Image (cartoon, rainbow, N blue to C red; front, side, top):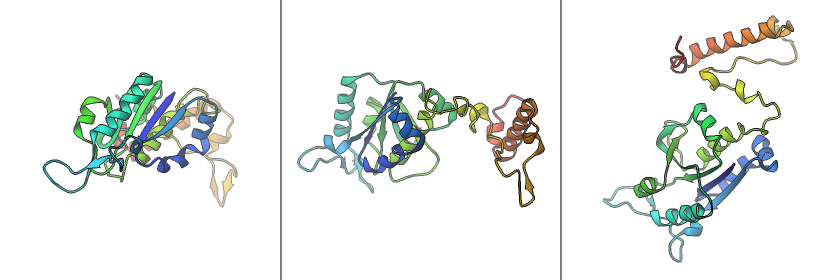
Length: 228
């Protein structure tokens, strides 16, 4: 997989890709992540990438020309499965979408800033618009890092235990069950007996029951998706 991230602030993205699972995926050549500084495509002496909106109003808008030049250059080198704009008014990102995007080969992520991008960018180039939640951040860099982490960990060979991702919360529209480790008794708080029983079937049934109970109590909106 190749992910090209178009951003005004590449430095904001460096740390999340230099640690843990994502770093190992990059080192194992399972994914390539490139940070592309949009200012390299800016206009004029000062590499301008923004301007005031037509019709007036507060804030600035990212102009179309630098973005178009950048995307067109990338598309001339390879084909892309998706060109994604990270924006608060996009489709809300979830595990189902992460599963789908993890099967792509090449992806462009466009990080917005200011009051967003010229609407013509969205009309001409963007294939999907993604939000990580109903709130506004200063830019698209943190959402881009979250998006990448969620899909990279699903790539074959990234996790040491290939079944680990399958038991994550939101897979099959269920929250993950509670987990325990040593000691079995901490100040009177004991691990459930079933987890110490050594019976895989009982453990599996307990975990499923716990997942169902947690989902019903904590995320009834997700539980509604079950046809039960």
